[in-house]
Image 1 (tube, rainbow, N blue to C red):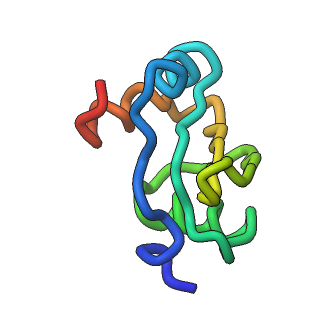
Image 2: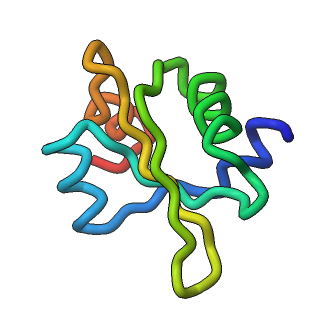
Length: 86
């Protein structure tokens, strides 16, 4: 699965912004068939950062949401500014 197929969009909600600031995590909607490894590889390839941990869940809408924690040497806030979120 290609990186551009794995990541559908980034989530921009009040909760997602608080995770960026407090826990160095970004939130994405990803392909339902994507594994945690696929998500990790896609984020590292597309955005040039190192991922520490990925948690996923299926939302009530039937979408897969991925919470991506970046390694301490990378700041989620910096990437969010680059992407135009903050």
